[in-house]
Structures are given as C-alpha cells and as structure tokens.
Length: 127
Image (tube, rainbow, N blue to C red; front, side, top):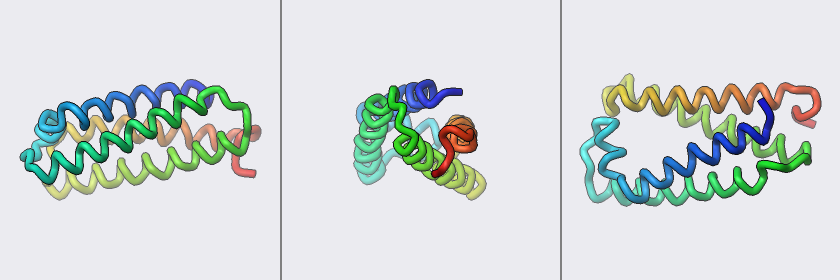
C-alpha cells in the first residue's frame, strides 16, 4: 500500500474520531461502556482537537515524495498506533472498557501494520 493511500485512510479515520469526540463524546464513551462525566467529556473534546490535527497533517503530507518526511510520518504513525492499540487492550483486559474498544484496536493495528510495512520498503525505510 502506498504512503498516499495510508495517509488518506488515516486522515479519514482521524477526522471521524475528531468529529465523534468533539460533537458526540457521550456516545463515544458509551460505546466503550464508560460512564460519561464532565471530566471525561472535557478530555474527549481535547483529544478530538488532537485527532483533527492528525487529520490535517495526513491530508497535507499525503502527496509528498520526500523520503525523509514519509519516514518521519510513518514512524509517528507506528508509534502512536502501537501505543493506542496496547492501551486499548490493557484497558479492555482490566475491565475498564467494553468490547467496542476492540474495533478501535483492530483499526490501530491495521494502520500500524500498513505504516510499518511502508517503513520496511527499501525506497522509504529509515535512512
């Protein structure tokens, strides 16, 4: 899969998450079986802003041919998705999140694998 395709997919996923956290935080929390609270909704809205920034970043760099930029963004995506997937599994196993979090974990693992495979290609991998 090309960097362009992965950047567009990540942009779409991040935009959906940003919209969800910014405008439907209660629904997002309820999907994971977490009771919405003022604090959780506040943090959720702030995370929505971060996801909006990730979506914008991916949209802006989607057509780059610069190997250094592709490597940097791919390393960022691998790290962030590994952390998110690991934390999601940890919270699920600890009983603090419901099974719907596993959908998020699957998407994060797919993005991690896509960007990881991209890093392993000879023309893009770490310099």
